[in-house]
Length: 242
Image 1 (cartoon, rainbow, N blue to C red):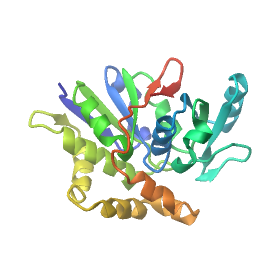
Image 2 (tube, rainbow, N blue to C red; image 1 turned 90 degrees about the horizontal axis):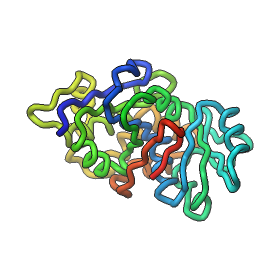
Image 3 (spheres, one colour; image 1 turned 180 degrees about the vertical axis):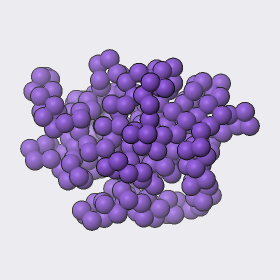
Image 4 (spheres, rainbow, N blue to C red; image 1 turned 30 degrees about the vertical axis):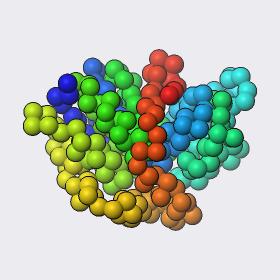
């Protein structure tokens, strides 16, 4: 039974050594988490997260084709890659049955901090209930928000707060960041769905997407419980699978 929830507003605020024995959820709502979930829901065989573009290219060369290269830098698709970081791009026709090599500015970097955790899951609003139901069976949970360029972002904090709100019990121990995230989410807990879309649009990540013409990704990321998938990062083989 769950007895502790820690939220980390940025990977840089996390001591990775504290994750031993914990189940971690990496959160990058806009957009890496949402895109990874979308890709696996569309039938991708796996997603291999990479920190650097050069690493992604090297790994793609080592895998049996067909391989899909996906990702972004500063929100923009990477030259020579097949796909960017818009979740709607990752359709069954494009990624079904294929391995994806994936690198993003913030999300894949956040995963690097979680190597010693017992389990590492990928969470977003798209699989919120599946995440909550699984975490309720764990003893310790750590929610790791990716942020943007080392700054805390509202979109990730809101999702962390939504998870904390549904997991909290009278005897659940939580750090102050979990309480802050819960408080941030409380203003939206009973609000109509369009309010979540607006809140994401008003976040730093949302404003960045508006600037580069990816408004549709915000509404996509605000959809709740579109899948029951629990993408998990296999830290030994460094790939995410269903």
